[in-house]
Length: 150
Ligand SMILES: NC(=O)c1ccc[n+]([C@@H]2O[C@H](COP(=O)([O-])OP(=O)(O)OC[C@H]3O[C@@H](n4cnc5c(N)ncnc54)[C@H](OP(=O)(O)O)[C@@H]3O)[C@@H](O)[C@H]2O)c1
Image (cartoon, rainbow, N blue to C red; front, top):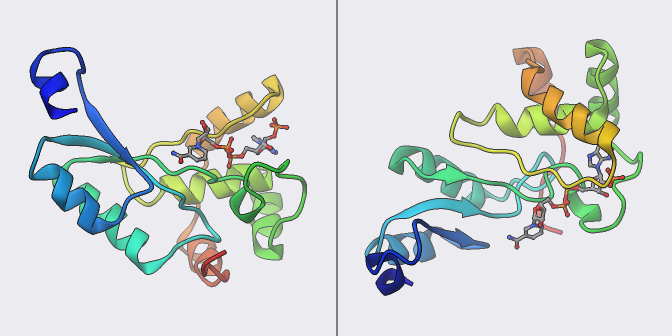
Protein backbone atom coordinates (compact mmCIF):
# COMPACT_ATOMS: atom_id res chain seq x y z
CA UNK A 1 0.00 0.00 0.00
CA UNK A 2 2.87 2.37 0.78
CA UNK A 3 4.35 1.67 -2.65
CA UNK A 4 1.01 2.39 -4.32
CA UNK A 5 0.86 5.65 -2.38
CA UNK A 6 4.41 6.58 -3.43
CA UNK A 7 3.42 5.84 -7.03
CA UNK A 8 0.52 8.30 -6.69
CA UNK A 9 -2.14 5.61 -7.15
CA UNK A 10 -3.48 6.10 -3.62
CA UNK A 11 -3.74 9.53 -2.04
CA UNK A 12 -4.10 8.58 1.62
CA UNK A 13 -3.94 5.47 3.80
CA UNK A 14 -6.39 4.62 6.57
CA UNK A 15 -6.69 1.70 8.97
CA UNK A 16 -9.71 -0.14 10.33
CA UNK A 17 -10.27 -2.20 13.48
CA UNK A 18 -6.75 -1.77 14.75
CA UNK A 19 -4.87 -1.70 18.05
CA UNK A 20 -2.48 1.08 19.11
CA UNK A 21 0.36 -1.31 18.20
CA UNK A 22 -0.99 -1.73 14.66
CA UNK A 23 -1.14 2.06 14.28
CA UNK A 24 2.46 2.50 15.44
CA UNK A 25 3.60 -0.27 13.09
CA UNK A 26 1.79 1.27 10.13
CA UNK A 27 3.01 4.80 10.90
CA UNK A 28 6.57 3.50 10.72
CA UNK A 29 5.87 2.41 7.12
CA UNK A 30 3.74 5.28 5.76
CA UNK A 31 1.63 8.16 7.14
CA UNK A 32 -1.85 7.10 8.30
CA UNK A 33 -4.56 9.77 7.92
CA UNK A 34 -7.51 8.04 9.60
CA UNK A 35 -8.44 5.16 11.86
CA UNK A 36 -11.88 3.53 11.76
CA UNK A 37 -12.76 1.45 14.83
CA UNK A 38 -15.89 0.39 16.69
CA UNK A 39 -16.46 3.08 19.30
CA UNK A 40 -19.51 4.58 20.95
CA UNK A 41 -21.28 5.41 24.15
CA UNK A 42 -21.64 1.77 25.15
CA UNK A 43 -18.38 0.59 23.59
CA UNK A 44 -15.49 2.49 25.12
CA UNK A 45 -12.82 -0.07 25.71
CA UNK A 46 -9.73 1.34 27.40
CA UNK A 47 -7.41 0.59 24.49
CA UNK A 48 -9.75 2.23 21.97
CA UNK A 49 -10.14 5.27 24.23
CA UNK A 50 -6.36 5.48 24.28
CA UNK A 51 -6.18 4.99 20.52
CA UNK A 52 -8.68 7.82 19.98
CA UNK A 53 -6.57 10.16 22.14
CA UNK A 54 -3.38 9.03 20.45
CA UNK A 55 -4.93 9.81 17.02
CA UNK A 56 -5.64 13.37 18.21
CA UNK A 57 -2.03 13.79 19.32
CA UNK A 58 -0.77 12.53 15.94
CA UNK A 59 -3.22 14.59 13.84
CA UNK A 60 -5.06 11.48 12.64
CA UNK A 61 -8.84 11.47 12.09
CA UNK A 62 -10.74 8.94 14.18
CA UNK A 63 -13.86 7.56 12.48
CA UNK A 64 -16.04 5.48 14.79
CA UNK A 65 -18.48 2.94 13.39
CA UNK A 66 -21.63 1.66 15.16
CA UNK A 67 -21.83 5.04 16.96
CA UNK A 68 -25.63 4.85 16.79
CA UNK A 69 -26.41 1.16 16.77
CA UNK A 70 -23.80 0.15 19.37
CA UNK A 71 -24.07 -3.48 20.41
CA UNK A 72 -27.03 -4.00 18.07
CA UNK A 73 -24.52 -3.56 15.26
CA UNK A 74 -25.99 -4.23 11.81
CA UNK A 75 -29.45 -4.93 13.26
CA UNK A 76 -31.89 -2.02 13.10
CA UNK A 77 -30.92 0.40 15.83
CA UNK A 78 -34.49 0.37 17.14
CA UNK A 79 -35.59 2.22 20.22
CA UNK A 80 -33.52 0.42 22.83
CA UNK A 81 -31.53 3.11 24.56
CA UNK A 82 -30.21 3.66 28.04
CA UNK A 83 -32.59 5.67 30.22
CA UNK A 84 -30.01 8.45 30.59
CA UNK A 85 -29.79 8.80 26.80
CA UNK A 86 -33.57 8.99 26.48
CA UNK A 87 -33.90 11.60 29.24
CA UNK A 88 -31.05 13.77 27.96
CA UNK A 89 -32.51 13.59 24.45
CA UNK A 90 -35.92 14.68 25.75
CA UNK A 91 -34.39 17.61 27.66
CA UNK A 92 -32.68 18.86 24.48
CA UNK A 93 -35.68 18.24 22.20
CA UNK A 94 -33.45 15.74 20.40
CA UNK A 95 -33.55 12.01 19.67
CA UNK A 96 -31.50 9.28 21.39
CA UNK A 97 -29.59 8.70 18.14
CA UNK A 98 -28.61 12.38 18.10
CA UNK A 99 -27.40 12.21 21.69
CA UNK A 100 -25.29 9.17 20.86
CA UNK A 101 -23.74 10.95 17.87
CA UNK A 102 -23.20 14.21 19.80
CA UNK A 103 -21.48 12.26 22.57
CA UNK A 104 -19.11 10.69 20.04
CA UNK A 105 -18.34 14.03 18.41
CA UNK A 106 -17.61 15.72 21.75
CA UNK A 107 -14.55 13.44 22.08
CA UNK A 108 -12.58 15.81 19.88
CA UNK A 109 -12.49 17.82 16.65
CA UNK A 110 -10.61 14.95 15.03
CA UNK A 111 -13.58 12.58 15.57
CA UNK A 112 -15.81 12.26 12.50
CA UNK A 113 -19.29 10.75 12.17
CA UNK A 114 -20.29 8.10 9.64
CA UNK A 115 -23.80 7.09 10.72
CA UNK A 116 -25.45 4.70 8.29
CA UNK A 117 -29.09 5.21 7.39
CA UNK A 118 -31.60 4.25 4.73
CA UNK A 119 -34.01 7.07 5.69
CA UNK A 120 -33.83 10.73 4.59
CA UNK A 121 -35.39 11.84 7.91
CA UNK A 122 -32.66 10.06 9.84
CA UNK A 123 -30.02 11.60 7.58
CA UNK A 124 -31.32 15.11 8.43
CA UNK A 125 -31.42 14.19 12.11
CA UNK A 126 -27.89 12.86 12.03
CA UNK A 127 -26.52 15.98 10.36
CA UNK A 128 -28.34 18.15 12.93
CA UNK A 129 -26.70 16.15 15.74
CA UNK A 130 -23.49 17.99 14.88
CA UNK A 131 -25.04 21.14 16.41
CA UNK A 132 -26.21 19.45 19.62
CA UNK A 133 -24.12 20.63 22.58
CA UNK A 134 -24.20 18.42 25.66
CA UNK A 135 -23.66 20.03 29.07
CA UNK A 136 -21.03 18.80 31.50
CA UNK A 137 -23.88 17.35 33.58
CA UNK A 138 -25.12 15.44 30.52
CA UNK A 139 -21.61 14.20 29.78
CA UNK A 140 -21.04 13.07 33.36
CA UNK A 141 -24.30 11.14 33.27
CA UNK A 142 -23.52 9.54 29.92
CA UNK A 143 -20.03 8.68 31.14
CA UNK A 144 -21.62 6.45 33.79
CA UNK A 145 -23.31 4.20 31.20
CA UNK A 146 -21.77 0.70 31.14
CA UNK A 147 -19.32 0.47 28.26
CA UNK A 148 -17.53 -2.86 28.34
CA UNK A 149 -16.84 -5.42 25.66
CA UNK A 150 -19.63 -7.08 23.63
N1 LIG B 1 -14.55 -0.51 9.24
C1 LIG B 1 -15.37 -1.46 9.64
O1 LIG B 1 -14.97 -2.56 9.99
C2 LIG B 1 -16.85 -1.17 9.71
C3 LIG B 1 -17.70 -2.03 10.40
C4 LIG B 1 -19.05 -1.73 10.48
C5 LIG B 1 -19.55 -0.59 9.86
N2 LIG B 1 -18.71 0.21 9.16
C6 LIG B 1 -19.23 1.45 8.50
O2 LIG B 1 -19.66 2.34 9.51
C7 LIG B 1 -20.77 3.08 9.05
C8 LIG B 1 -21.88 3.02 10.09
O3 LIG B 1 -22.22 1.67 10.32
P1 LIG B 1 -23.70 1.19 10.54
O4 LIG B 1 -24.54 1.88 9.57
O5 LIG B 1 -23.73 -0.29 10.50
O6 LIG B 1 -23.97 1.60 12.07
P2 LIG B 1 -24.66 2.87 12.75
O7 LIG B 1 -24.45 4.09 11.96
O8 LIG B 1 -24.25 2.87 14.19
O9 LIG B 1 -26.20 2.46 12.80
C9 LIG B 1 -26.98 2.33 11.67
C10 LIG B 1 -28.37 1.93 12.17
O10 LIG B 1 -28.90 3.01 12.89
C11 LIG B 1 -30.15 3.39 12.31
N3 LIG B 1 -30.18 4.85 12.34
C12 LIG B 1 -29.40 5.72 11.66
N4 LIG B 1 -29.72 6.98 11.95
C13 LIG B 1 -30.76 6.92 12.85
C14 LIG B 1 -31.53 7.89 13.52
N5 LIG B 1 -31.31 9.20 13.36
N6 LIG B 1 -32.51 7.46 14.36
C15 LIG B 1 -32.73 6.13 14.56
N7 LIG B 1 -32.02 5.17 13.95
C16 LIG B 1 -31.05 5.56 13.09
C17 LIG B 1 -30.15 2.85 10.91
O11 LIG B 1 -31.46 2.51 10.54
P3 LIG B 1 -32.27 3.36 9.41
O12 LIG B 1 -31.77 2.87 8.10
O13 LIG B 1 -33.67 2.99 9.71
O14 LIG B 1 -31.96 4.81 9.65
C18 LIG B 1 -29.32 1.57 11.07
O15 LIG B 1 -30.12 0.51 11.54
C19 LIG B 1 -21.15 2.51 7.69
O16 LIG B 1 -20.63 3.36 6.71
C20 LIG B 1 -20.45 1.16 7.66
O17 LIG B 1 -20.07 0.80 6.35
C21 LIG B 1 -17.37 -0.03 9.10
